[in-house]
Image (cartoon, rainbow, N blue to C red; front, side, top):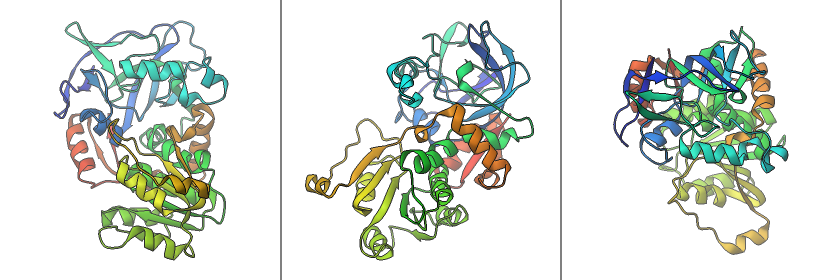
Length: 364
């Protein structure tokens, strides 16, 4: 099959023929139909998110189940599925507590670039190729754990449903699950890429009355308005903290979301948050990034919290998002700025780097 392989950091992906083994116990083979182009894949390519090499990136996929291995009970051939990059074990401490995105086994295996059993299904000329996020969906097919497959109705377009696999779940979930945004409140969202736009629409779905979108690119601020932003700020022109305070009766925002992954912007989000408010870190920082906050400010009961995958329970939350989309209450079509073929995946990465798109989709 054809797949996009990363052999060296900060080099173009090589779209070439690779071998894919058959699924083992509790695994399935999925024919990938579409895959969203996420900044996390860009971060893998450039070493911000670490992965063993060589690796096939891609973690925002959707497709059709073609083959199931032994002991599979959750899906069958012909099922349409969104792929979850949180293939949790279901029995560790965190899974038992209802937090599958914190699964110990999942995080260990993802760090090894393998599937849940610690081995890989990808290779070329006998050389092992690693899996990104347990999926590797920049490919025509993927062998994944059955727990990574979230079944959806056949009438849902897969080139839109794939976005729920990461960006939409991460962004909307950060607002609704992690922050639990309340109606009538205020929110600041720093970073209006694909995930940031979904934080904005999550805040809008939750009933926030003031949603302030922040970005250095005016085209992204225009996108933000379409997804529910009531105000926009370009920090290159306006003082961010002063502007936020002027829009919130001098207090600061009830919630501030950082969706970039930089220490500096996390500190800015915290500075925008009112006493007793919540700063939610959604962006994925490099391990070397640090954050400095005034210790005394904690006495004002300000909170700072991380959000992974929208604090989701994928098999509960993803079908709900799909239902919202089918009922015209969640914007997915509007997210897709461009589509690419698998052979054009490097062009898609360039457009992402330049900030030209809200979200692009690689259609197989």
